[in-house]
Amino acid sequence: MTSVHIGLDRGDATVAAAEHWLHELLADIDPTDVMACTHFVSTPTPHVAVSLALPRALTLPDPAAEFAEGARIARDAHAAGTAGRAVVFPGQDRMTGVMSVADLLAAGAIDRIRVLGSAAPPAPSTEVDTLGYLRPQWMDGRLTLLTQPANSGRLAPFEVADQRGCCSDH
Image 1 (cartoon, rainbow, N blue to C red):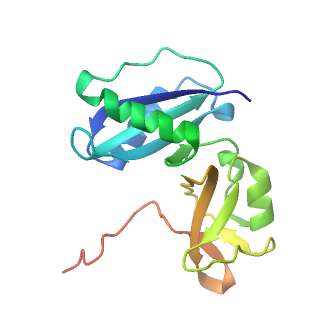
Image 2 (tube, rainbow, N blue to C red):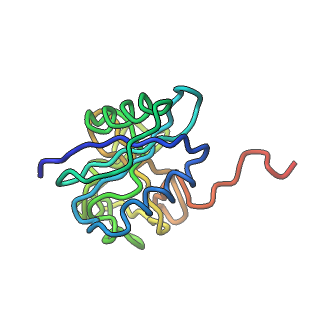
């Protein structure tokens, strides 16, 4: 599939706001061949931009002049596969529940699974509890799901839906 890459930026302060905007933008689009990512950018100030890879060009809002550079950075990083956190990606709807590494990789766009703190890839039979929330990242041209050890020898995504900040209770 040939993709058209688009960067968009409205200066969102949070990942949640950028994700919400992406879902609004894609509300009337078949997500089958769409990939949408968030990107931390620092120009003109630190914020979250977004990128899309679509099977065809669409008319989408142009970023305000002050955010044009952030939109370009997001687009270029996504197109090169060097950065971006996938919010929408092919096969996402089939990646639910507990799946083996092999099945998860076969289900869609995720190219590899890494375990934090380990140089070795997980065995194909290792189970991953998706926790209903996967946010793989572009790393070295490959869409990579970062995981961590979980209960019963399984893996779980490193990023979870409801993040609790370190030291948030004191």
